[in-house]
Amino acid sequence: MRIVILGAGFGGLELSTRLSEEFGDDVDVVLIDKGEGFVFGFSKLDVMFGFTDAAHVLHRFEDCVKPGVRFVRAEVTAIDPVAKVVTTQAGTFEADILVVALGADLHPEMTPGLLEGGHEFYTVSGAFALRDVLHEFAGGRVLVGVTSTPFKCPPAPSETTLLVNDFLQHRGLREHSEVSLVMPLPLPIPPSPQASEAILTAFEQRGITWRPNTLVRALDPARKVAVLSDGGELPYDLFLGVPVHRAPAVVVDAGLTEDGWIPVDPLTLQTRFPGVYAVGDVTSVGTPKAGVFAEGQASVVASAIIATVHNAEPDAVYDGHGICYMEFGGQQIAKIDVTFQSGSRPVGWMEGPDVELAADKSTFGSDRIQRWFGRAWTGLDV
Ligand SMILES: Cc1cc2nc3c(=O)[nH]c(=O)nc-3n(C[C@H](O)[C@H](O)[C@H](O)COP(=O)(O)OP(=O)(O)OC[C@H]3O[C@@H](n4cnc5c(N)ncnc54)[C@H](O)[C@@H]3O)c2cc1C
Image 1 (cartoon, rainbow, N blue to C red):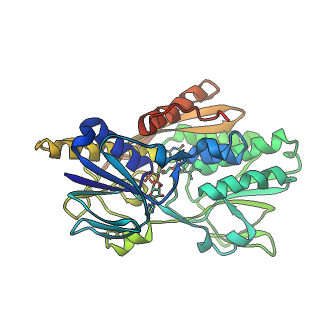
Image 2 (image 1 turned 180 degrees about the vertical axis):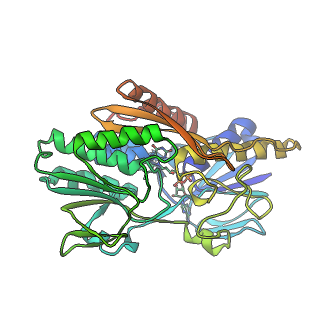
Image 3 (image 1 turned 45 degrees about the vertical axis):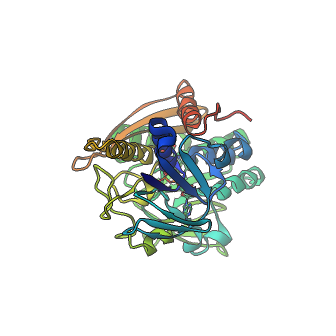
């Protein structure tokens, strides 16, 4: 059985780990990624706000040695989902089962003015570069804005806004600064009214302006204003943006997408091509684009592959459940638990925010690095 996994992010790492744990060297798993390593989404914010160093949060793929799994560092340049053949810069790979876990590509250049007049904090390089920008910032109007939907980790813009507020306060810059957030959602976390209320209360207490149901369409760097989807404008001195998300071009060119993303069976993650699965941000499965959901989906695909190898009927189904941690500033962390089950209304609840949940968040990261890379790691050690 030849299993080829495209993308070593949350989804690909979890899937390859499960298969290695189950089969060891008995199954031929190839894991392909063009990057040098994995970085948690939340680590981008940790580096940006100076809580840790860039080198500490990069988990190199060369360290990811697992029985039965061959890691290939290469760009995937073509996918034939019918023949299940993948072309890369390092050669061609034929699969019996193919899993696409290539995530979402980020396109700051698609928002007019963003590259020239603002910053984005969603790519690794963009977030890491902001560390210096923030340290040099002397205060003023800070605008955090989302430029299109869908976007990864819906709580992240709210979290970033609260951390900016904290950052300015610690540096004595908050009093002569303004902090605003422009988001396309009606509430910060729509499935959880409780979490949304806590976030909106935190915004109010800190004097943060919140503009829901709105996108930033463009920046006018000459006038230092953001042009909004409702026709309005907001002035800024420092713009921190969530860039446009798209499925990787190689996935679109392969004919795997509909309306921009790969449609899958929401319970099994199968695409319309036999033997081809897709998990995580690259799909339109119905969950938000977040690592915990990619991981849960990968786990269901792992169970299906394990059953197939054992000549059994796959019976695991995806439950749409995930948890994430959100920083409120002042080392206060909340744990948000949401379920997006196919056919039901999404539901969610929140624990905290409090300082004790920092240990939970740290364990969330360290457990995964231990399982995926086989080494100890503590999120914030420098
Ligand atoms: C600021 C921020 C904070 C976040 N916080 C959280 C959080 O707290 N919790 C959470 O669950 N999620 C969080 N996320 C979201 C999370 O990072 C993503 O949703 C998650 O990584 C998606 O997993 P994935 O496996 O689908 O794709 P990814 O993890 O993006 O992996 C895709 C992989 O495919 C590779 N790839 C792409 N194209 C090619 C190609 N052509 N050839 C070869 N390789 C390719 C990429 O290099 C990448 O390694 C956050 C995101 C951001 C930006």
